[in-house]
Image 1 (cartoon, rainbow, N blue to C red):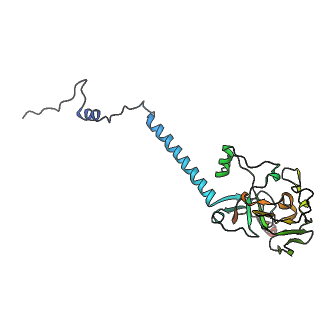
Image 2: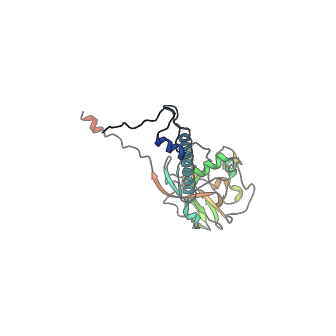
Image 3: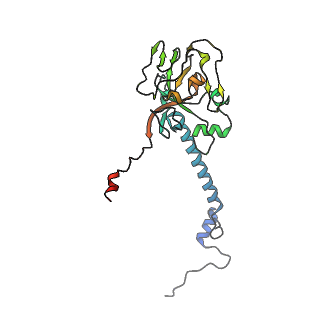
Length: 266
């Protein structure tokens, strides 16, 4: 029996497979060798943009609703918190309406008078930095202090003794570094040097007693004589509170000295 070889398409004819692809509209011309197709590049860009957007949204939600990390840049809260300590600042209790208590350690944006009259900025990059905390974006300074006076409290500070709340001496032996070396009895005595180096007096010449107004707090650092707090810039509006310090998760520990007797034996 004579065997015939399968017919091959002549020039100008397409194989059945190719003809089927062409009819279905599924044939795609191959790009130049070694170069990605244009559709692949666009898909990669789209997926990268989606990943960035989703990451930013999750970061903003977590930072606004749950918690954020902060570090301690100064000695104003010693001995409780030390320079370069890392801590977690929780937000959920504020959203759930948990009342602020005396002794709480809060992170907050300082009053404008402390920052030379400059308040929080509303330009897009700064707002994005405030929402995300990303280090390559502009970030505004935040303070960390302890709640000493609550709304309605009558507060007085006596040099070498301590803080009086509603006529009673506050027991702060568990957290303060030393007793205050200043007196504070009326509003007009509140004042000092701000973080910008300028002298400030928020209530000049006032002889009124120091009574914390509604919606405000009196904040002080545990390192009483080395802290720019409410005894310098006055009351803190509770709307400026960022959150409560809840967990110290990193602290640099000094290595113990190398025992000399180990060297003596060599």
